[in-house]
Image 1 (cartoon, rainbow, N blue to C red):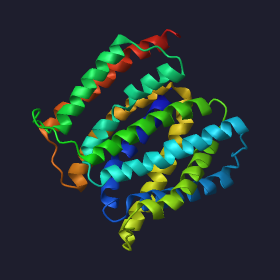
Image 2: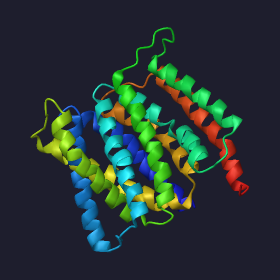
Image 3: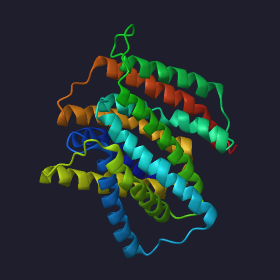
Image 4: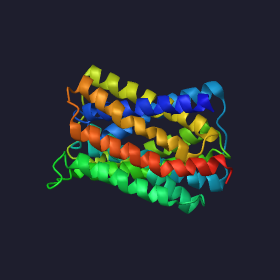
Length: 294
């Protein structure tokens, strides 16, 4: 169990860094094209890995429909909305919004997995929302300007929660490599026509360093990390795994300071404490219920 949580923590640290890397890349590549290119290199990596391991298996029709849904919602829309949002959204604020994923995951688990919804979770949700409000307001509570990019980040958060629930369900019957490969192939194929329909103008960089960053982050962030996540999420429940996303805002803050020279503000720190506190509060009772075996 400790090994599983260690690997999941590594994944979250990698994904936290992705906010800053994504902010850098979206300045040189249009968002849908960037999504398509990233998925291309992810699929190539996974095809090579599957050829080496020879673990990929066929899935039945029922599971195939679920994988198709996961590929469209949890892969394509999740990554596309992420890059569209980062065109204007602040990476740290985006990370803080995505930190509330455990709360939405708990709500979805209550609906689809028949898990209990507690008063503690509702109170924690309110606390987290207060934290988000404070961060978005940048310390000026009387004047809030919501960047349209943050609305896309909210969509990213919703699709990420859906991905966690669906992966948890599918992992009971299908091995992680099969889920990851098939869902990413679906996401890539769906992204191809949209890259030329949605991106106007179509922007692409011819700088070698930009392509190196694109390929490197694609393989590590969305290839290796996703594979590790899918492989270890089977050993823990969805709400416990998603609580680790609390680390992402702090990783984004530090990476933003290092790579973008973006100072860490008191509003971000205070807001992050509210958000993390709200998430911990909302998931504490759930952890207790699971330990009792109910």
